[in-house]
Length: 364
Image (cartoon, rainbow, N blue to C red):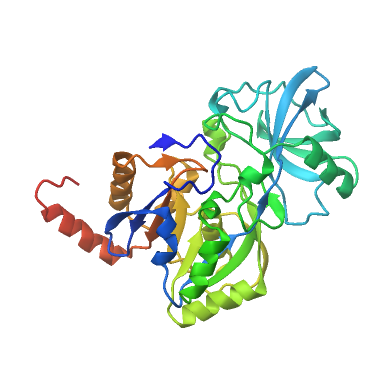
């Protein structure tokens, strides 16, 4: 795969790898996405808008320049935005690979940071020189104004031009609570939503504070995803129950939707409306109770997003998918191509593996 380096959400040449519940792979133009859904399906997307969560500034005690990337908060309370989880980098910006960014100057609890018009105090160092909890001074209104005037979207070096907020807001973006875009939603636009309605497909949203995808440090990357608060509206919870009753499919647009719905689900798969915080990782050992299929970006092995896909398919199928993505030159990262994966139950996966093993020239 190759990195998508232009901030174009819906390029006409966008590709879609389709894996059905029997393990068959097809390659479609992503413009045909709506054709994958059928009556009684429910498509659930994350309507979070992306914050301008990258803030340049100075560490006054050392005089060194820094970049702060906001990375988490305790709840979706936009009036209680004084306290944030954050990553702090040394001098530089998105033009340098995150892995190559210098560490910040030595930080201590009580240090002050000057981030443009925002004054910030380091409350706590969280076990790593780069990971901190911050407290912002001022009223909620003053903090929001400071973020809007001084902040920029978090950005990585594979996109070479500076991002604007409209580059990272999905067409259905609502509350500004995400730290990076729930970018699987880039595949949607209102014409696609209209096509879903024409096909008898329900469409609903949740709000989930999509977190950062990379810290630039293997030790911290192993902790991803950080805790992510979410809110499930009453109509969405009702739509999920209706779909389950009718034995339709619940289809998540992106990993953040999977994480929120599975966190909210009881042992019986019932999803109640309300607020919560997704704290668990989803991976190979996870048992999905709600989500039957996912539309996602293409993710590199070893990332937390790729790990989540292991809850849908067995490892051999995921390796086949990765091979197909490479052979067909799919683009990765937030402005890249997409995959549609239906959940393969273990019995079907074993049958598929046995079938593939008998095929001449196929090496497991």
